[in-house]
Image 1 (tube, protein in one colour):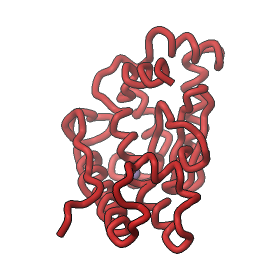
Image 2 (image 1 turned 45 degrees about the vertical axis):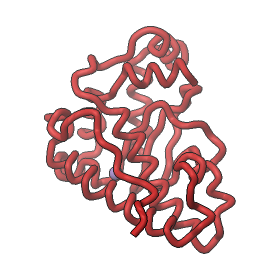
Image 3 (image 1 turned 180 degrees about the vertical axis):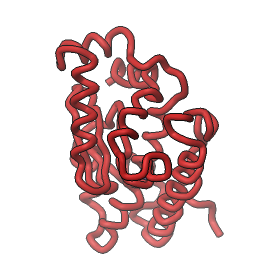
Length: 202
Ligand code: MN3
């Protein structure tokens, strides 16, 4: 069998490094099972559709409207699932200090009034996502949401500079039904240096 088109990305930290905010068990399950399943199912779609082959992930995702109708929902679900998780892991890091420095912090303060007001608004938006989905901070510092494995890139938007998985699989083992506890804990493991770098390059 040919090498699969897409592979599960490695994390820049260990599964247990984000505890107690996100447990080792959740990280391991989320990365090695949930994300791997999106990768495997996406590879199966790619393997039988030459129009998707030899293309990078962002290219496929950003041009999903050109995908044949018979496989479009699979590309949204599995390609989107791979893409969303791949960027989500990069937005996480242990012990990053709780808030950004420099240009990003100033820009968030200018837009929202204070860093805390931004945190409150992003938290409120994340809690308001009905069912499964994502909340995003866009390069223009607006806050967006997606349902299921939809993603801004599928709608002519740029890549988010920060995003949060609010599917129950992201928190149920740690927080049961309490999404608000998960979101509040997640702020402790946001990779602000990386987010600030994404912002400065956007
Ligand atoms: Mn997930």
